[in-house]
Length: 182
Image 1 (cartoon, rainbow, N blue to C red):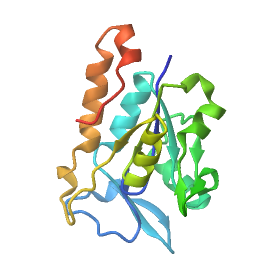
Image 2: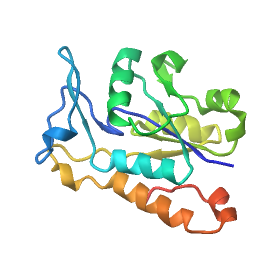
Image 3: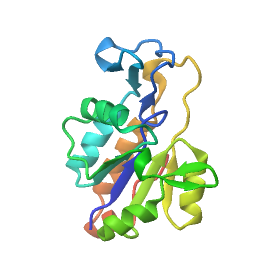
Image 4: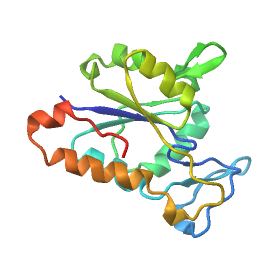
């Protein structure tokens, strides 16, 4: 059984348009969204981490509360080498107490093979609280400090290193031990 990681975009995979560009960010890292929005700035190591997960056999999906046009423009540039299981937007969210929630129960209804094998990676506490309360795993991505250096944000590097370590264990351990926040 493979494990599914559902990842958020804004402030999880990178800085949304309109945010200050971190010091030291190479121009090649910037993703142009549109003239109305500007640049999306991926966090260092996010591409490498997701590509490594794919190589190791993990399944990956993206679920953002953004509008479809915005989300698809970023995903196509950010993960061109990764076959994503799905890309969902605000349209697939559930409205719970005036919050658009990424309810992982919806994921396992559509993809029952991932029951007990799915984890959301999101920066928003409300997303993690809702899903952990309902029995799902969630890793809350930390917000980098304001005006950080591009090379200082190591969250995705640590997740990739943890995946490699976990995959070096036995086949049984691969099923039992998903990536944990370090």
